[in-house]
Amino acid sequence: MKNKRIFCLLLAAVMMFGLCACGAKAETKTEPTAAPQPAAEPQEAAAAPSTVLSDIDQQLVLIHSKIDELMQKGGELPWYYAVTDLDHDGAIEFIAASQHPKDRSTNLKLWTVNADRSALTECKVQKDEEESFPDIMTDSADTYHVTTSNTWYYMFYDNVVISDTEVYTSKSAFDLKNGAIAYEAYAVEHSVVENGVRTTTHTDMNGADISLGQYNAAGTSAFANAEKSSTSFEWLTADEVGDLKKLTDSLLVFMGMKKPTETFPVPQPAAMQAPEATPAPS
Image 1 (cartoon, helix red, strand yellow):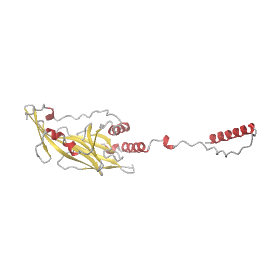
Image 2 (cartoon, rainbow, N blue to C red):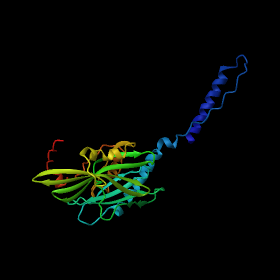
Image 3 (cartoon, rainbow, N blue to C red):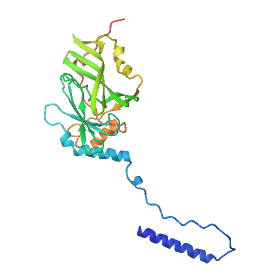
Image 4 (cartoon, rainbow, N blue to C red):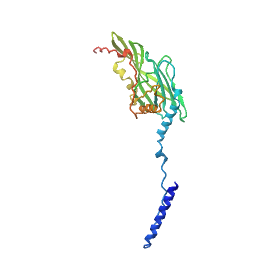
């Protein structure tokens, strides 16, 4: 700043000297020249990240600082982790999930960053005690935004494995609203394997028989007036979740700003791998 002021004074002196050297010409009345303004200081906003990016960075650093508390340790099943903004309110979430390979039951915990970005609050997982949460650990999900309630729904297939020859698959969607994550099922497929061939039947949530086409359209029909898109998820292992860059990548994948780099290895139930029986002619 001191050097800048000296330069301005020298420049003013040179200009005055030049005026005197030119001599006086015919006297004319002129408007006074506006005094030169000092050079504007660089704006802080140009040097600093935008408010949104700065806020996201702050949240990611907070999650990273709490990783030791958020990681699920012990137990036989591996846990996987993801960073999201499921309700699109700007406060990001940290998800921890594990899945039993036999019956496909899913354990789920979820935290969201609070309003002043000082801590994380655990969200409530709404489900019946005897039920498992839908198979949330997937690479992508059809997404429906109901604008009237500003609610975002994520469609999943929830497999309930009875045995290697029998499985129920419900078409379900979950949403995060007011600090609670909940889900709803829309239709059910029942698969039974006999002599190496899989036969399927379909019902609505009242137990009434429906066609395969109705089953496939169950989710779309439920959100006929919603805005549809697709959301990707980047699930991290216990070895990866302690890396701030990996946490950032997980959020960027969810936001659609980065392509997924991993494919989550969720095996299909044995019953689902059997060839399906050829449907009988109508």
